[in-house]
Image 1 (cartoon, one colour):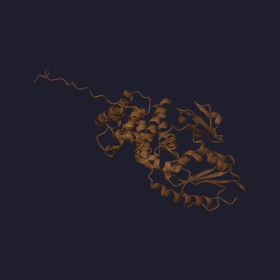
Image 2 (cartoon, rainbow, N blue to C red; image 1 turned 60 degrees about the vertical axis):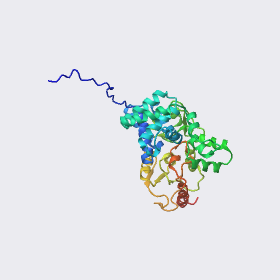
Image 3 (cartoon, one colour; image 1 turned 90 degrees about the vertical axis):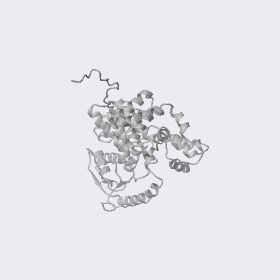
Image 4 (cartoon, rainbow, N blue to C red; image 1 turned 180 degrees about the horizontal axis):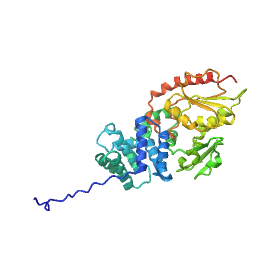
Length: 401
């Protein structure tokens, strides 16, 4: 029998199972959906948050942090990519997208939040261990420790070209916009540096959360009972939530009697509903209804008058979102999947028609920050013919009067 007492003991640390942080795992899942499926964060995040709350994993503070991590990372992706590129030994295109998402989440915590440096690094490395494995976690750790050696202003001085050498590229890095978007916006706006800087900075502000009380189903008084809720500025159905307010914590939102909808969107629906009309007011059409915010408000307004709403959407998955938004509407409605340029109804069938045509999304970057990275200059030319076709069909669909 051999003597094992002289065998050297292992001196390495015992394996430790990674700790799963629900907030950061959810943020990572949302970023992967945006990257892999071309999804929009404002459509991906709410169901993920709702599921987490139902499982008991989240409270209001967790939801607020997850939201900040997702939107902050998407908003500042261009700047963070420039910082990460300076800290890795290969082109960013050679870094696997899931690894880049974990790195970007880590960089946002380091440079864009008040999370302490050691906590930001350790939490990101733990996330990497959970979703990527120990080997890639070491790479994440090494990169983030380099990033942590300076703050955001210091990094921008290092990675952004001087303004005098290349104004557009400087602004693109400083304000996290593609160079071509900076150029196009500047051409449209005109003027000097101050104006375009204010515009780009405004795109990166955290958007205000606004709720809509759907008529006949909820009231603004009910919504004003929510934490940090104040009346809207312009729409009689609007209630604003102060920073950190969580829509999913509001009972009426969870039940679909209220929703998240900017006041501009509410006012468009109200403009249609309040337009003077001769004769009957029985049939309304939302010709590009996805994802359903305007349709839900129109459906509620139509129900108060005994009118019927037809909501049409070309993309089946978006038509599903419309159906979900209209679920429980007190009046008659129908959701169909149809191409608005080739109507599935006879001309002159409707008393009121709304058509919110597809667009680049570059005018709403505060709400949809990922749109800036998704669009290309050549995309713009394709929208005008589609918009004209939808407008013609909408004009044909509304009756005289």
